[in-house]
Length: 73
Image (cartoon, rainbow, N blue to C red; front, top):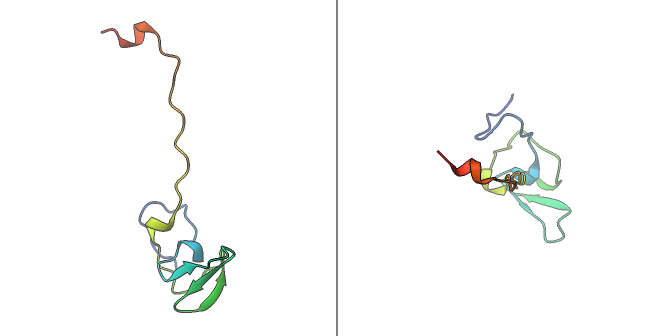
């Protein structure tokens, strides 16, 4: 059973992105309310995507080699 994702279908279920889990202080595991201690990359049936936990990809750098002709009408 595939869960729908808010932003994109390319995000795979992971306990690090789940609303039920919190990353442990050591950063190597997830403390889940429903299933206990889990690995960061594991997932379970109660996965619920939390978009605020995802770290987005870095934005591409803008173009910096503009000429004066680029700003003329």
